[in-house]
Amino acid sequence: MTETTQQVRARRRRSLFVGGVVALVAVGLVSATSGAMNISIAEVWAALRGGADLDPTIRSVLVDIRFPRVVLGMLVGASMAASGAVLQGSFANPLAEPGIIGVTAGSAVGAVIYIVSGAAVLGTFGLSAAALFGGMAAIALVYTSSRRSGRTDIVTLVLTGIAVNAFAGAIIGLLSYLASDAQLRGIVFWTLGSLAQASWSDVVLVTIMGGGGIALAWRIGGALDVVSLGEVPAQHLGIPVGRIRIISLFAAALAAAGATAVAGQILFVGLVIPHAVRMLIGPSHRALILGSALVGAVLVALADVVARTIVAPAELPLGVLTALVGAPVFFRQIRKSRLGEAT
Image 1 (cartoon, one colour):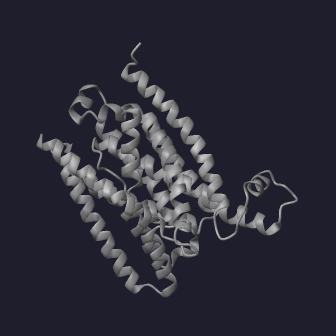
Image 2 (image 1 turned 180 degrees about the vertical axis):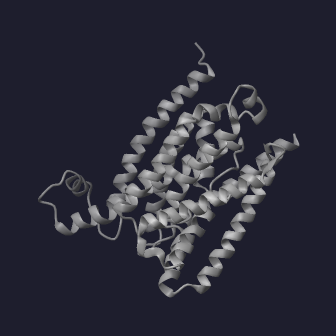
Image 3 (image 1 turned 45 degrees about the horizontal axis):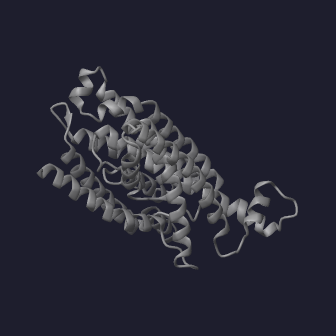
């Protein structure tokens, strides 16, 4: 018997989630054992189960440095990918992504202002609040600017996002000029993206913000399925498009700002991964959001391993690596969109 499209997608979803969990464990082990100090899988397992016979130095390296970095990379990847999935569904456009429409840049501006103002003594959660405020301000500006006659103009959305990114870059450049040497190092961290300063407090923060954003996005997943068909059909079916868009924007900004607050600008993850997952399992947003989060967790954790080993003992900024991979995919997607409009 020939499988229906729904059966094929259901099978692919099962394969994606099972394979994703296996890959997540494998990447976690590779990441924990990779670095300047050679650590075996047996030692990783001993640290996880609290073995008393483990060398104190190895235990410290694993528990205080590598484990939080592994977990944080997974959380950042999940947050950025899920944020991209919900934005693409909300605007019915595969080019919508936290970095492209200004969310990531706005969060970075909020974080940089917080650093340069001297308020950094308030700690990580104050920094995250500043990043969230910046991301929300950017996405509110982009959204209101792209509205026309009660509808969202996608071209204006992308162009406004480009303008916001340029303006944010100018602000960051100006603040970098005015910053002290210590503040400048922090600003460079935000603009390039890195997990080098990962800590358990960062993990808690992204769990709260990223997890909250993903959970909120999942709850409106059914409505996003309808909204992605277009504003007019969704309104005819009784979906409050405006309210769903606002909720989706808040969810996306919450997840992206949490990730940006601890890892800096990690670009194109929210563009490439949801697009690939959608091609595999279909457009159902509840499955798409969770699938994107899972794949994003795997790929960002893997990218972090590459970033800190490919030029060892130095470390390649994670945001630079994701941009090198993601930018060509973005160009390809723009070309496909233009060709689709031409036909």
